[in-house]
Image 1: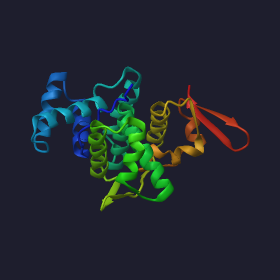
Image 2: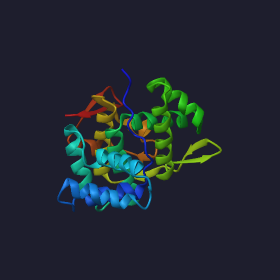
Image 3: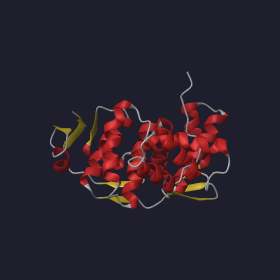
Image 4: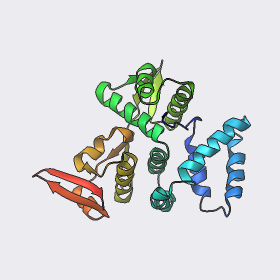
Length: 235
């Protein structure tokens, strides 16, 4: 069975910000659809492309899976007082939950950057085609995700060679703990080594220095294995 892709339109930060802000102000789903469609007109002329972008935005922030509603609701609560980098972290977390394809792209990019410091579109394409098959829908989605990542200023490009932008420093404990939960769910792991969180490839744009004391004040479970290994999992 072919793996689902689904992410076929470039997004921009201000579009993600708009839907996150309007989510708490809008009474009905239809009103939300109309507001977002109208907002996107200045960026996207074609009606089909606009519907595609709206569908993606809704899947990220509005029509989330039941198992992720609590994480989305906490993201809404934190969004109002968040800085630009913190807002990006919240968008990023919900994007990798909503779209496994985007999560896999971020993971492959993170690994290539860790190994080589840069990557080419050809290298990335080979990695993604090996996971999803070499088909037009996959090519379109690779372009859309790369365009989104460039627009979000987490990667830079010169002659089809990409590098990571400077990592965004995240200091607030509630955001770091939230992203740790997102990581566990998005990567379908029961636990992760505490020291490994900062090096997780799929969150390559962010610097997350999470301490054991912060973890112990959350509803995450911390278990020690040996002298210097702490594992973090969902309770």
